[in-house]
Image (cartoon, rainbow, N blue to C red):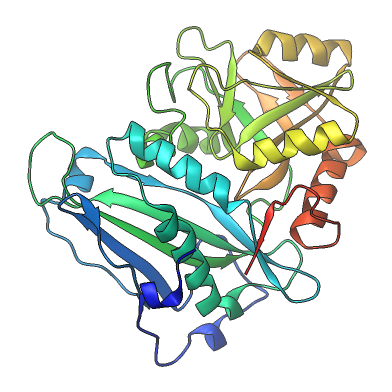
Length: 354
């Protein structure tokens, strides 16, 4: 593990924390006092620097803004009932970050920089971790190409950074989801499994059009026939049919391997439910709803945690559900929250204590 002496630290003169309204923390709007930054050049990573949060400058020819070599992760830190701060499964995010890096022809970030730097940054800004239930400190590691060159090739230089943002719940109410049947998020052999910035940029138009129709997010479907379920814009998706949990599998490389997804599968199995990961068609869901066996639908993700789905609709069908009557998804959320906030034992070793 990286020690603090391996990181150059420049502390802020006066904290901004006193200006923060802890009862009003919209997601991604506020940032802590410090950030971590480290550059890659000549085939190696430099010395990480933690310095006051501030704008960064770059050349107009910077490769990332022309050719899209940019990736990121989302992690959360929580304050336990006894006041201790923990991070939920950051080792999984570290591994997935480098999976994304390899796919985008970017250098892998060493563990001592990613994990060591992350912990040192949170120790420095620990006071920013909210103590209110369903609140957390959102951690955003990211990397982008920095070559000052117009040319279609992998960059030779990169910048890795981590910023922190205290936040409340991402979604406060059950979601209405529109089934996308025009635009495509990912195809086999593409970058759908990577947490690449371009995946989210490409989703903006479809999401905006869905919101104009009165929906919150889109459910992406397969690129060929728009018949197979993939994932929702900011989360993986689960359906419970006749007491069995179904979620799309990861085999085609078009779906993000969510850490909350993985955690949810583990907890659902502990609840005694059978979890099936396989291709899942819209026709199956429509038929199950008509038969009265589609019981629940929900999404999972670091930002959204567990979000209930009250409506799933397309131009051809509408499925309406009643989350207030559900049994399984609320219990799943309760159990995961209990682990994150130290209410229940961390039997899986998911919490990294700071």
